[in-house]
Image (cartoon, rainbow, N blue to C red; front, side):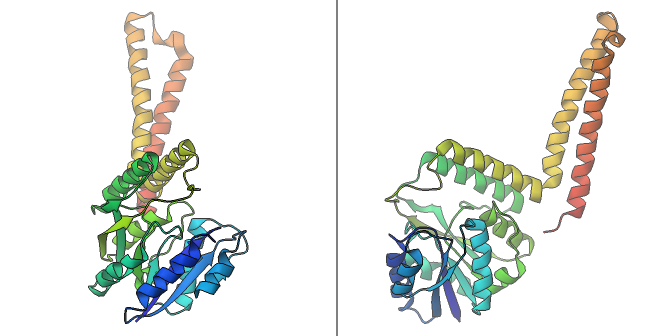
Length: 295
C-alpha cells in the first residue's frame, strides 16, 4: 500500500527540512511504501532546495497560487504517483509527524477521510480569533453534514485515493470544508482523531491581521451556506426582505386608517411592493438553486 505524505509550503525553508526528516523517520518504522511530496507554492526562499536535500519529492508551482489551488495540485500529483492513501500536513510543524500512523491506522480500519482534531486533543497555543473562527466553521459544517465535526479547518488529514478520485475540490476559499461536505454526501466514512497542536514559533501569515482574518472567515462561512445550503441561505435572505416589506406594509395600512391616507405616500407604497416582490423572488431562487445543486 502506497502512502504519499504531502506538504504544501510557501517560504518555509526554516521548518521544511526538519519536518521532512521527521516524516521519513516515522514512516521508516512502518511497513508502508511511501514518498514525501512537497508542493512548493512559488516560494521566494530555498524551500524547494531544502526539501530535496531532506529527501522529499518536490513539485514547484510557477507562482504563489494559495492553499486551495495547491491542495488541488497536490491531489492530482498524488494520483499520478499512484497513491493509495494521501496524508496532508502543514509545513509549520505545529502538527506532529509522529501522529501520522494514528491517522493511517483509522484508514486501515475502513475510514475514507480521517481528520486530526486539535479540539479533541491538546492545543499548546492558538490565537483567540483563530480559535473562534475554527469553532464557527466546525459548527456550520456539522449543521450541513449532520455529523459532529470538531475541527473542520484542520490542516492534518489522511484520505484514500477514492476520496481523491470522487470528491472534486472546486472552491478557492473553503477547500478543507468542501472536502468534508462532499465526502459525506458521497457516503464516505469520516473519523476524527485527537492530535497535539504545537505553538508556532514565528508569526502566522494567515492571522497577521486579526480583523482581516475574522472578515475572511465570515465571508467564507456565508459562501459555504450559499453553495451547499442554497435553500436555507436564500430562504433566510428572502424572508428577512419579506419581513421588511410586511413591516412597511403594516405601517402603510396604519397610516391609511389613522394617519390621513396611505396614498399620500405613493412612493413608499411602490417601494413596499418592490421589496416584497424581491423577497419572494429570492425565496423562489433558493428553491430552484436547491433543486439544481450538484454535490
